[in-house]
Length: 320
Image 1 (cartoon, helix red, strand yellow):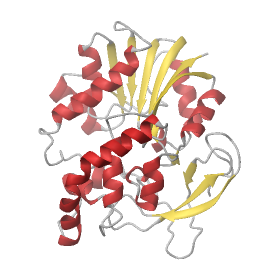
Image 2 (cartoon, helix red, strand yellow):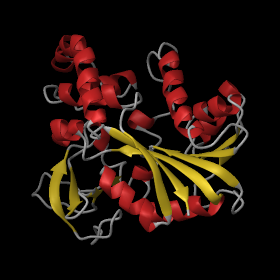
Image 3 (cartoon, rainbow, N blue to C red):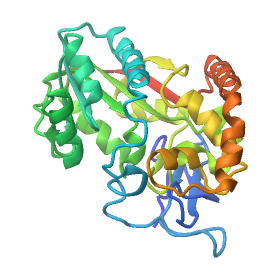
Image 4 (cartoon, one colour):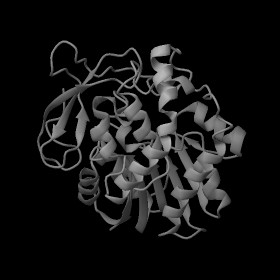
């Protein structure tokens, strides 16, 4: 059953639309939207006719398809770009918490950011539920991650200076409960850095139900910047700073969402690089034709970020 109220601000949520699933071949998924903050919710029942499917209860959805453990095509080539992403995220942390502090990356993936923070002088560790992430972090970066979910992670109360939660909150079923756990880890005055897709962004509007960052049904909550701020305040965090000009996800997200308007497969290039989609002329030709538009998409996304309508948003918040 779908939630009766918005998980961000608590206002009523009403039927909104059925949107394309993030995985090729899956049926559309029904969504509801908050009447106050605009945050949307992936629901468990259809509301717009026979084409809207219930959100599948697939236990390994974060281990298959685009999230399968196989390394994507060109992984080594994009490594310098990923280092630039990590450097920007670390600058956000450093703006409020100096090196030497204790940092926990909740949902650490393959451990890349933990390694970057450790090399910069932070006492950094990470929480990651997947075995492949823990193994990759150990083998590639020499980083030992704790294999656990956020709720059962062995982190002592009041022991952490900064927690980073980067594109994780949209995946959890109860965002408020997750923030309460993270708040308990932080010392009084400790800082949370959180990044999520921004449903109030220009690219969300332009992409429509083909917006790359919907990623249905993996994403449960689709925050607006306003909704994220409301949730943080409800859970006893004070907003320190909000950022919309972000290298990671934003320029590529706008370009890919626009290209998806004309390709049969939503986010085809992303899935092709993840070895998760076949190469068909109907997808390949318009994608190649759109490659020269990448700089223009980056410029539009920069303008969106400066207007506080970036495709993703990062918020620094301090525990009261």
